[in-house]
Amino acid sequence: MKGRKSLPFFFAMAGCRNRCVYCDQARITGNWAAPSPEEVKKRLEELDCAVEIGFFGGSFTCLPPDLADSYLEATAAAPRGSSLRLSTHPLCLTPEAIRRLKGATLGTCPVSCVEVGISSLDDEVLKACSRGYTAREALKAVEGLLQENLHAGVQLMIGLPGQTPGSTFNDLRRLARLKGPRSMDLRIYPCLVLKGTPLESLWESGRFSPLQTEEAARWAGSLMVEALDLGFEILRVGLTETDSLSASFKAGPHHPAFGELAWGECLARLLTRNSAGGPWVIEGKKRSLLLGHGKRGIRRLAELSGQAAPEAVSRLAFWPKPKGPAKRSNRRVDNPENEL
Image 1 (tube, rainbow, N blue to C red):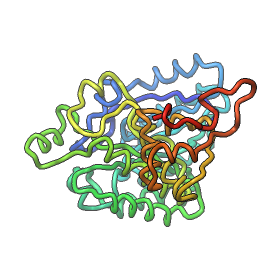
Image 2: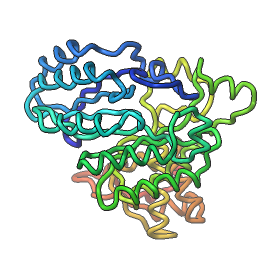
Image 3: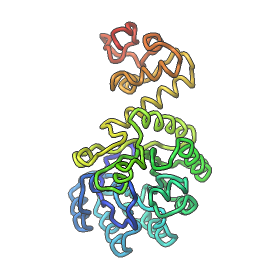
Image 4: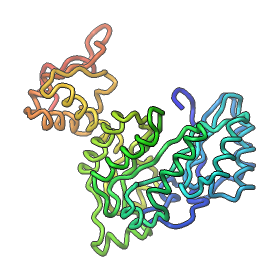
């Protein structure tokens, strides 16, 4: 929730019905054991301001009903005005589970969003990843949330076995038709090869080729443009960097600031779509998306506009202008040789 502190609790693979080929949430998050309801309650009692609680990393509605209810009851210890965001597996969003979450929205800590781990809506990709459900079942789960007026979020991935950019664009369009004019949250994660996962064996045997970082950034950035056009709220792009993730990484588009690379790609595409050759004016706070990471965004802006990099920079300005003495980080770029 914008403007509110987030307090996440991680349930690494808790409630998961099967092992997906790419997944090891404990290594991704660095959290190896789920907190107990009592631990959650104690942590919430220590707070002095409202938060958005997060139950992430597992499939919350796949937990035994009594245990899930205990966690929901524990959230009542949070300060007034707090809310709960949780993630879960599509097959565990049964009518009964949805009714339980709907009932929780009437309590002192309402459910602000249910994020559904979809990954893909391509049945062949889902099968290759051992996701355990079909696209039809995933869409039915999301539809069930919307019918009960619960705010829904989806988590999609790029670079999965058998997946193409075209199939991910189709995923977004199918979800957009389902949500209609309603808002829907979106997270995009690149597929990484992690130590000890079935995908590692596929990669080592040459049966799977992961994306390179540049390829993944371009894929994610173009997908983000489509998502914004379709009315999605993009919450996150890329995995949170942890020591555990870094230690378990084997291959794929692993970058500690992958989200910035993708947002830079998205921004360059939006700018050139709105004005093919410039001039372009953007918010100063977005400067790093173009000038950071080896000026990658500027180079993409140049490529997409068909200009040389210095010429593209000369047609770029940042707004608002700084107060007082000009600061290089916010002024118009007049000497592109110094920027590249």
